[in-house]
Amino acid sequence: MPPRPPRRRPGARDVARTLLALLAIAPGLLVGIAVLAARRDRRRALNRAIGVWGDLGTRAAGIELDVTGAEHLRRRPAVFLINHQSGVDPILLCALLRRDFVGVAKHEIRRNPVLGPAFAFVGTVFVDRTDREQAVRALAPAVETLRSGISVAVAPEGTRSPGRAIGHFKKGAFRIAMAAGVPIVPIVICNAADVLPHGSWIMTAARVRVRVLAPIDVRDWKLDDLELHVAEVEAAYERELATDAAAVTRSR
Image (tube, rainbow, N blue to C red; front, side, top):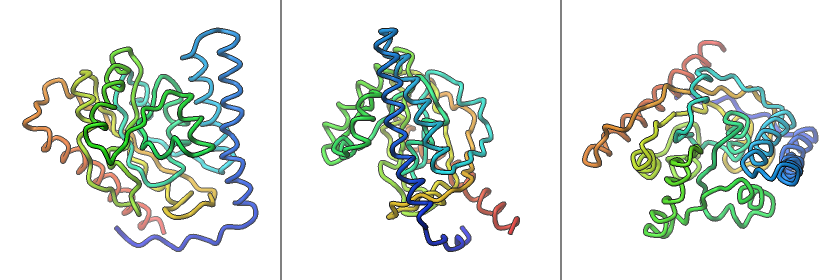
């Protein structure tokens, strides 16, 4: 990919944006709790909390979403895959999916004083990546969640990539989809690092380009061929990111 132009130095306004984007979790939780108290409907409460955080968080951070293939986001239940470029990805995911999904996240996030309680409230499945057997067992609730009609969002790289290029996809998300018999919907986030690059704590306003690919039917997949299928999906991400990078270069 062509080199990225240098990121401008964050200023006081960017610090304020970052704080407001993080604090947007609070009104989302409060709205969710209020809905839960009034309606006694946990799923409705979670959906409201997710939607509020997605809307307020992106607005506070100065994020404008440019989405193609948005119609595929309505496919439910499904395993939604995202490439993990940035710490802002959870906010983007809430803004994109909005309802009826839970995430799969590394267990370290549970200890985060801000994100931990919010992620736990919305039913996130926490996985210890250092314990392979425990990680496999921890995915079982995700399969049951899908069978109940609720979607799952997973970053198949397993960790944040250091740049725009994707890391190697792990098989867990694909196994979940196969076990539940639901499609995979790839969500290619092209430039979330423009908002919050790896290693940074301050968000800057940006237009984030998102390409949602057509759902992939996994009902005929076999475990013996899983590695090939995973490689095909990974290659699709690489093509989309390369196409986006080329388009950005031409526009300069």
